[in-house]
Amino acid sequence: MNDYHQALWLALLQGLTEFLPISSSGHLALLPRLVGWPDQGLAFDVAVHVGTLLAVLIYFRAEAGQLLAAWFHSLAGRPATAHSRLAWSIVFATLIVAVAGVLLEDWVAGALRGALPVAVATLVFGVLLGLADWLGPKTRGIEQIDWKGVVVIGCAQVLALIPGASRAGVTLSAGLAMGLTREAAARFSFLLAMPVIAAAGVWQARGLIGGGVPVRWGLLAFATAVSAAVALLCIHWFLAFVQRHSLMLFVVYRVALGVILLLVLL
Image (cartoon, rainbow, N blue to C red; front, side, top):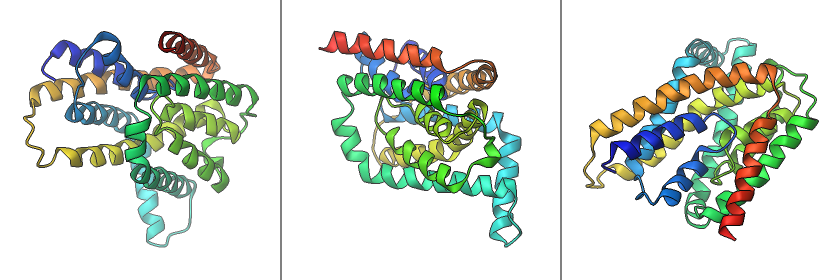
């Protein structure tokens, strides 16, 4: 990629959609196809994901520090606390999706990258989000996540490997199905994003090592900064939104987008 205009729009899109339940990978896959842009390349994808990682680390820096300290204390044999249990929940859920990501990478990259799978996933997982938001009891806080909930949310994250499914969407859906409040499900989704995005970025970046492809560092730094700034604002807005509203706004958007794409493609 050598166009700052394209970089701006894709970085804005990544920052806006990474933490909302509408699928950043689906939107990033669709936009270049819809407007006829060339593929942005692996280096750009890594850069904008670094931006969203920076955003969630900055926003949750205090909680991240507490969780990391509690996790190390538990490794040293200290008694379990609410923070250490939450930290282990994040570790375990991350391991599930990390293993699945390595095993399924080639299949997902090959069979599910087309516009039609993205359209179907956008529609189907949007409906599932609506059902979880409607039927979930929404009575449990983040500190009440048990191991059953961790396993369910961790396994649900595997579905986010499908472009269009949305990592935020599937973790929110699973959290709500396990009885979490909207705010608790959203916070757990954000905290879980830290190791997941970091691991995905490192795994993607391996393809850049020794690739011999020239890197435009200024363009990538610009994209990283835009993605981080937008994602930071988005996190703040979304946490405030879920305290007062249901998730039906995103459900309607996903269903409408999925139907429109299917009508266009079919």
